[in-house]
Image (cartoon, rainbow, N blue to C red; front, side):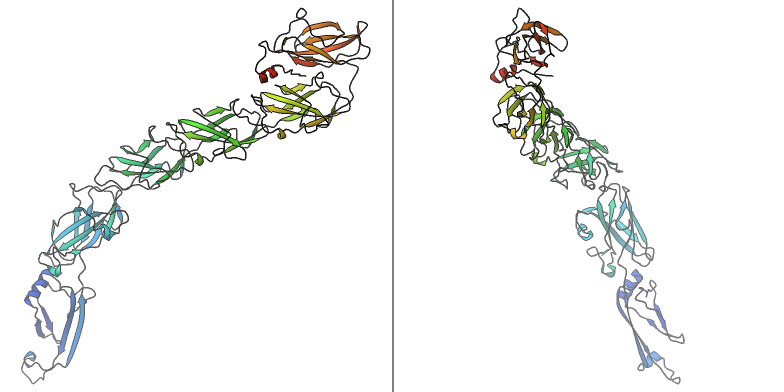
Amino acid sequence: TKQWDGENSQGYLASNSGENVYNNDFSRIDQLVVDPGFNAIVARAGTLPSGDYELKVELQAKLWSDDDELYFINPPPVETIYHDWRITIPVPPVLYFPSDESAINQTNPTFSWYSVQTAPGTQFLYNIRICLVEEGQSKEEAMENLTHWTNDWDIDYVHLGGQDNISWTYPPEADPFAMGREYVWQVSTYNEGGLYGWDAFEPAVSEIWSFKFGESPELLSPGQGGIEPGVRPSFTWAPVIGAMNYELRIGDRDDPFVELPIWDAVLTDASYLYPIDAPSLVPLPSYPYYWKIRANPLEPIPGEWSEIFQFTISPIELTEPQTGTSISTVLPKFDWSTPGEFGGYEIRISHGDADPVTNPIFSQVFELVSFEYPADAISLVPGKTYNWIVIVFDQDENILGTAEDYTGVSSFIIDPLIMFDPPTGSSVNSLIPTFSWDVPTGISGFEFQISSEEDPELANPEYTYLVSKENYQLNASEYLLELGRTYFWRVIPLDPNGIIMGNIDEYPPSDFVVENLDTTVPVVTVSINDETPNMPTVSLVSDVEDADGYALTISTVEDVVWESPVISTFPYTPISDDISFAFNTEYNIKAQAYKNDEAFGEMSAVFTFTTGSESGPMEQLDEEIELIIDFGD
């Protein structure tokens, strides 16, 4: 009648008791006899030891006429029944709290587990062992590490019966847990009497569970993948409960795991402004930086590192000239915005088909965040495209990064030189036409060239003249146009040293034809000599038929400064007793034809000239420029 259920670990005997076996008529057959030593173990444990068991039941019979007891006759069994079963004792203990892979925040957490099922009054010793998990370790591997803390079997527990829940609180004197770190724990137990083969050398052990203490810091800013607007970013993170201080580490693009930081600091607050004496951060998208935080870095076991965030510093923004725009000067001003203060800057400029970093035509280092192209530098050419870039230096005048890392190139175009008067293919009806052109500002001088149809490409111009303005009135006394002929002209810009800006082939000629000259009015021109640079010499280029002489009028824009008597002999130079003209001043001259002391016909077209410098001759090129006569309208 005894039920033996090995699957459910039944088959329990009451402590210090026996078991009676009865026949089907409820008459006692015999009392189960257990070996005294074995029975003592069962009595202490309250259950049969784990193992395999066999129950053999024999059915015997005797005649009703036989008065002897059956067990004295011991006849052969009529039937024999065997029952095999296995008793499995649960491996103690069964862990309960904190649950596996959970997180705890208490400084002194409580651990609890369930004991093995034993009889009341059975005494067991328990030990709890806690180990730190190193990076990449399994639970089993971590359990082989040095012990973080153990209670050294000081839990002496008398079982109440069944499976008891046992609790233990992490003591205040124990080594504190590290913030954000993972730990494993395991409970061992044995009975000093050696029940079930467990002893101090081979105790029964639980599974291995893990828990995480607290949280690693949560990074706030700079955010993951963020672009910092300044070179001194502010680092912030969520405060960690129980953290006394923090360690911040920053790595460059060669150290994404921040193992060899370029800067680290131990802090008490949950924010940090990158200091000015720290290594300068490179303001380039190709230079990412990485940062991480951990709590309590000065403890024997520091807190776990946070996740790693990446950020970059906002690059230099080239603002003027705007990329792709056309500018109206050969001496542009360059402006850019920066994410902070740097030790210096280098601007590099190249032709439009070249890299300004590796093949610049101009470079210069300076400290300001703007730059005006110098007049004495290699000239920027009208109509040409240029690339430019700014490279940053630290306080020690070292390039931040490498020059090749700077790829944020901007480009601009210099407005071209446009010759617009006389228009190409047009006709002129004057021996002293005015030639005009548009050019970008900043050009110090030009060479005017003109030839007849014998030299349409101006390979060897018949006449050249240096001018400093954007127009030139042809001096017919030096180069006389002929009626009905075609002429070719162009203007070539010159740098301050008198060198052609760019290639001469980049300035194609324009043409015009001379037609319908008016011979009823005189044509006069002026030249200036070195000896009397403020006294003009007037030439009569084209006279009027039947005229006896000509009266000259010289004026400024505001006033008439001199009127001559009728002059019949040319060239003519006023004497200082008549008039003294100012140096370096622009004047206009006109002529009126006279006959028999009477003016007749119209006055001539205005010819504009400029007096020379009082300082006298200079260097050859400058002297030529001083001798230039600028003829305006």
